[in-house]
Structure formats: structure tokens, C-alpha cells
Length: 105
Image 1: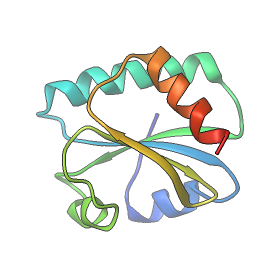
Image 2: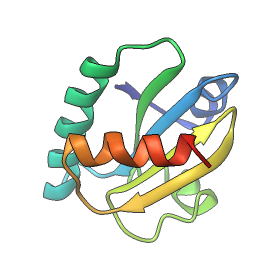
Image 3: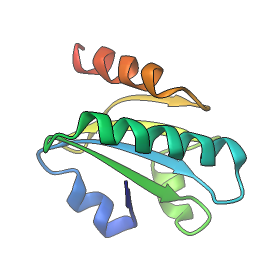
Image 4: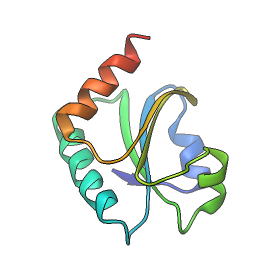
């Protein structure tokens, strides 16, 4: 999972699917979600799907731009366009299901 800032987030979106977790280091559910996404990332291993993390304490403008109201918030982008999101902590299998549903839209 790559740590993202404003410029790396923009560049990571081009031509790919990007699953981004918005969270903070002090947030226990964010830590659990980050671990779950790391496991899922190792399972998926594809060039067309990338996983990233935005620390909302360090990048409040990104938090505002993407209308993050609570953490953790997970947003799935396709070529820079949001195609799905959820808030809260989920297991890896549930996130995989969420991704599949978003790709079928």
C-alpha cells in the first residue's frame, strides 16, 4: 500500500483502479482496516489495481476535497473517477465483494 499525498494521489489514478483508505495513525479502526487492505493487496496482485493510504491529519485538503466525513473511509477510483465508497472497518473478503460490485456498475 502506497502512502499518498496530493501529487502522488493524482498521478496514481491515471488508467488504473485505485483503492484509497483515508485514515489517521491514532485511529484504531483505521489500523485494522489498513492491515485488512494490505492482506487483500497481496492476494489480488495485479497491475490494474493499486492500493493507497492518505493520512487525513497530514493532508486535510484531500480529506475535504474527497468529502471524508469519518474515518476510515475507503474510496475506489477508476481512472480518477470515484466509482464507490464506504465508511468503517470491513474484513478483506467484504472489501473484495465491494470491489466486485463497483466494477459491475
